[in-house]
Image (tube, rainbow, N blue to C red):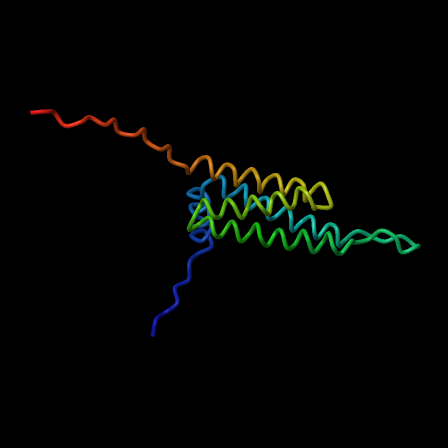
Length: 140
């Protein structure tokens, strides 16, 4: 039987900070966008209603925020394997949050997702080399 090895809290913290220091910054921007979208949905749910029953959460906005946060998280995870495909998915989620998001927090989350996706796309693209000139073979 394999024994379970327990790490000290300091070792676990050190491995977590090392993993974060090796992570590209565009992934952190995308993760911030996802967290802001979830925070926007939670903030919308926690709005109080007044005595007339008005105010409170607009459930369609909450559902849109949560679905688009899920799509943004999906783009973040896909970008681990394919940066181009993940950045496209995250950009679609960010654009959806900018258009449909019901609060300033959702707008900031969408802009963070869009910025992270654009940053990922720009920093990981390799420039195409110029074409090799054609030199005809020498005539004999």
